[in-house]
Length: 187
Image 1 (cartoon, rainbow, N blue to C red):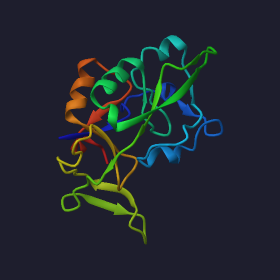
Image 2: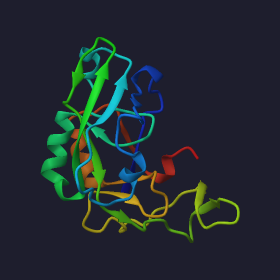
Image 3: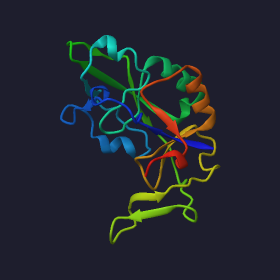
Image 4: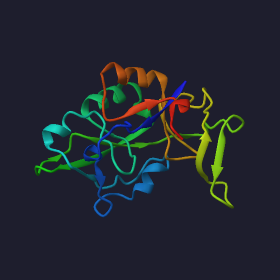
């Protein structure tokens, strides 16, 4: 079984950090499933909470859906999925003027063709083969292969997570992200 990395449904707008597009790497480089060379400058996020509030999160929800991970969750990822991402510097600016470098931006370095086309109902952008969305989403259970984290090669916005990694992250009582099976996603 695999899961999708998602924002919590009840996440308050205040807790969703804003990606500073003018001061950060091109976000589209970060959804290609490839190593970046040379390493880009740190990504900057603006968080409408205090530094103390920021410290309570294991994952930083953001407006561009990039995986931004706090120290506790990062320890789990380093132990169990270190070959699946490139750790990039992230700086989070809080409303009380603190610039935190405790969070890590993950550049996922693998993409997999995971979509079960026979069982999914896919909406395409008119006149193209690009996926617009889904009416029904089904992934093949074995699609992640040896990886714990990967992007969906056909729909880069979806971050796929192995059940083993989800179990380990849930064991440390994470917050700021949820992991849902495809059938639990509201489409």
